[in-house]
Image (cartoon, rainbow, N blue to C red; front, side):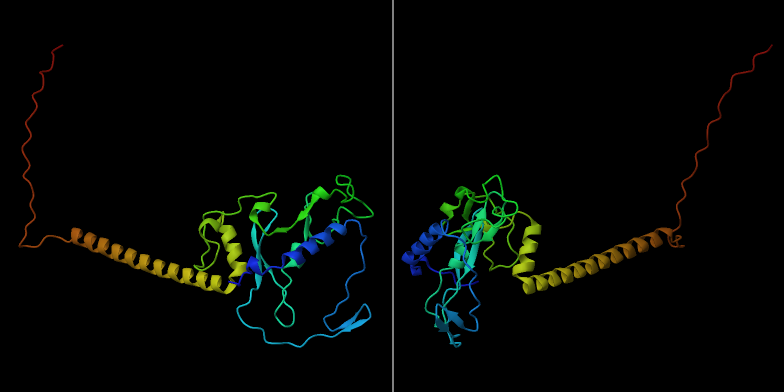
Length: 253
């Protein structure tokens, strides 16, 4: 399991600045896309060069716990700088929004790309101008989730150390299988192979029991059909003479 970020290591002031920027983005038009700086480039007249790979100390947090707008728990990956000292607090994911009008999620503010289509804008939300229709995709506290739903059940994951157990189980066996095939592919394949091998052993054992039962029944039938020997003569019960019935004399005509 990944090491989850402790909330005490989060810069609250930086996150508040990001929230203020998101609020101001409603009044500012869209800008050009950010260029790809993976191999370096120019940013405001300053040349940026890619940093060298450096060894990062082990044990740092790799994800941050959050909840989706419907109450589903999730882990947001953290992006660290080249020195491995400063992380972004998963802001790349916390800035994503969800549209309640068309159920489109994962876009950056301020507007929904589907509802704000220039050729055919949405009439229900005024082309994504209704701010109440745009909500964050992820929340850092479960109490802030606007539409919590019961997404957990009583079926645990097959893996003993998976967190989807107990009160965080699955509602159906199909959900557990989908989770296992996507998150624990190698372990789930080994588990299914073990289950198949156990089924083969059970079938073999049941077949051997059935053969033993059939052989015992056959031996019993052979013993029942064996003729008696001279030492043990066959007992034939004597027939009792039947009494003659007395008939009425024929009536003379």
